[in-house]
Length: 89
Image 1 (tube, one colour):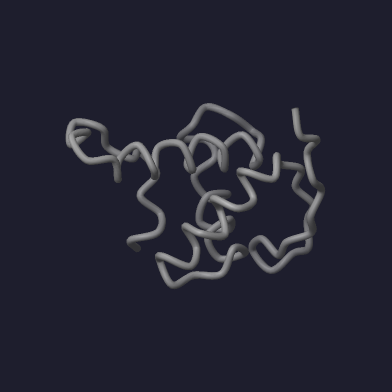
Image 2 (cartoon, one colour):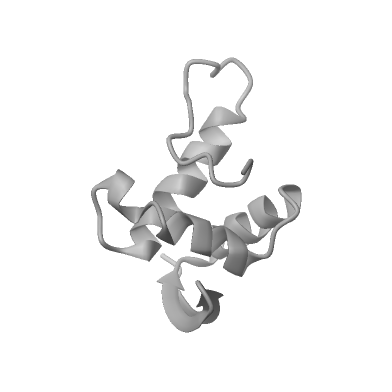
């Protein structure tokens, strides 16, 4: 199993570190590009909604968001709704 990669990002104007598996970093970057955002802006929006996921971990919120984002985009999955619609704001 690939090890988690630690990266520094700017969230809400502050430098922070987040450790994610490479696949999640790739997916997060892809989502940000699709939505015309930076990874930092997307993570800032997610950080504002961490409580909605009943977690206090930004990395957990990112993993859930990435899964929900791509599930919602899957054809035939119209019933799945991304609870954290942060990119469309």
